[in-house]
Length: 273
Ligand code: DGL
Image (cartoon, rainbow, N blue to C red; front, side, top):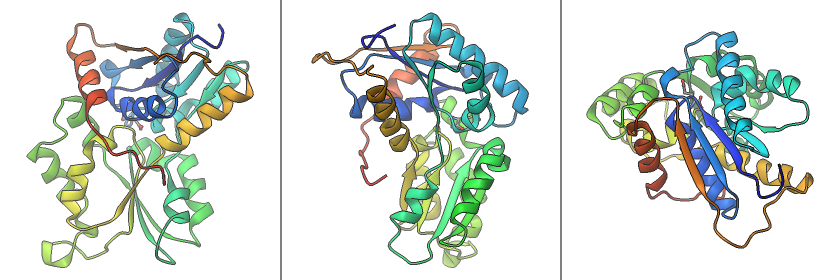
């Protein structure tokens, strides 16, 4: 293992690709190995002990491929397993995700912003998010909402479907305009607290039907990954573009093809995150 070794990135499925693309943007000379555990997705409605077990298997896979650091590109696995994994692998650099509540509060243009946090049921009910929201509850009105219906649709390649739009219109009714049939609790920002959700941004924006700002924890995770590699003198010094190798726990080519499609989607880099 040395500075040329790859960075290992895992998620419960294809969602972690939304983190990989920010990592690649910020550190284009690094090599990456991505593992999407789509066969076991969604993690978000499984017990914590099971999420730890699956996350551990993902780490073992990445270590067997010689990774110099592990990025948990999954809020659910971070919430349920990051501390446990750090205790199990004390020498290993392990970077997790945190829903970008701090950025949403720090960068808000209004004094007491209304912030919607969307995540899986496991993240929404986990202790980590509870603490995080507690830290900012004086500065903002924060609404955590579990959105378990998004992950299966993104995993099925249906991120632009009517089915997803209808699901979100229904789920987000309290936050839609009254004239659109909602309760009129308009939000200033939406925190994407699950790495599958950046692929549903158009659907979320259409379902809410007005202007607000998205915040995505992937930017903070990429910054932290860079900082940890610098600190450990493990930054890849090569001038050449790095490589990306994609793996899925689903046999066959289809799941990897979906990962590649999502990786190739154009997206707007938002440094203010
Ligand atoms: N992408 C994951 C996250 O960030 C989890 C999705 C799931 O498997 O439920 O939370």
